[in-house]
Length: 585
Image (cartoon, rainbow, N blue to C red):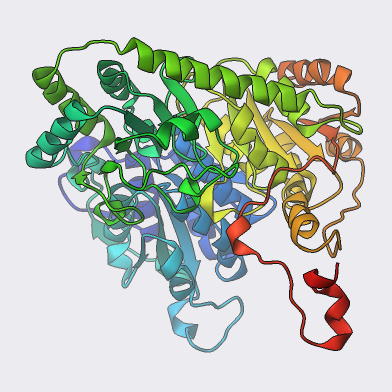
């Protein structure tokens, strides 16, 4: 089926509902859809090759949405996923919830039970709208076949406007029949930009910053999405203000800039934290300042309690949601930054504060020395920090790194630095395991010329290693760095610190992941000595095949607990458990 010509887009045309859906996807520039095929949408599936849309089959639907989450973050376009009604769609709950917490535009095409049988508890029937209501920005339900294109346009409009996934729910019998409708271009039904924000609030922001003695900037995901890093640089250099990355967005400001101080949040940069705690004005650009991302770390309660906060966010729901603000700007991160910079130039001259710059440099040098020192401590067989350090040194400048959740994966927050944006794709605050590898596949689809490396622990690897088959089948040469310490180490660290080394459920026995990778058609390399790390990384990065590095690291060298405030030393009241009471240790 040829793409509908522009001349026809101003008038209604006769189509099947499947054709109307596919042509709307074509108009949106969708080039691929991820999922697992199912009978519910086969009429639509049959059209995809002719429409020029590739269908990428995965091994588990959860990973399809993780792939599209990363694709969207790297490419800046909404990803699209699909699955069979019932179990195929509910398999995506975890990954769609993660994308929702990550503010990632995504369309979930959700075939549902046919209208003649709804309510009979038929085969693969599920009220998918109810399941997804709390983990999407919206659920758009097709109420009649004639509305399929209109409803899909609505789904894209909300996904981009509110920055998150939208469920497009369509009864499986609505793919068939005949409709008359328009096929519109995106500019005819959605606008991506919200402008710079209120002039009055921008004036207040510039006034506060011009009077600040110790301003600090936090640059977040919104800065990346808006391509606003250059504007943030302008403000930072004008004020000689250090710039911290928001939690797990280490690509939101270039690490090689003199004023870059690294990320805040769990296992972030002490340099960023020590400077931020002294701030009198904080300019938070494109970040919701999440609770978890601003918690104390390394026993440093760094988020300033008395500072005036200026928060710039495209979503009004995020302004002052977690921290009270002095100025809230609802606007695009780049456009708002440009306007703030214009006002600053009018108010004050650019005069470099050399003592401030020296303080920034000193804090960064001290933190870098500490990171290297910690990494060079001996491990049995390998200190996980040493492996992270060597990987950070081996990565090309244009490499994309995806990271999972877990003890070692999260320690990567301290070691992974980036000079380009859209290069750090992390699991973020939903915190589910199994994210990094499918995300790496999605990132590689978005940027095939960039090396892509996933950092994942052996626990999370068990949830995603089956997608090596997808990478091999689709010829997607990503590198999985599996940090194998034989445990669910984030939880094991809690058992060390709070439960007197009583380990229940935290130890893992697994196969040789390198050999498993080979059996699936990928390259596999086992690494057990620090001196072999560099060669292993270089071999993997140079390979044109999916590669799995099974890196054996010391299971006793663990990072601090994620949430010291979330656990207490155990107290037991029944006699049979008294020996477990912390007072009896």
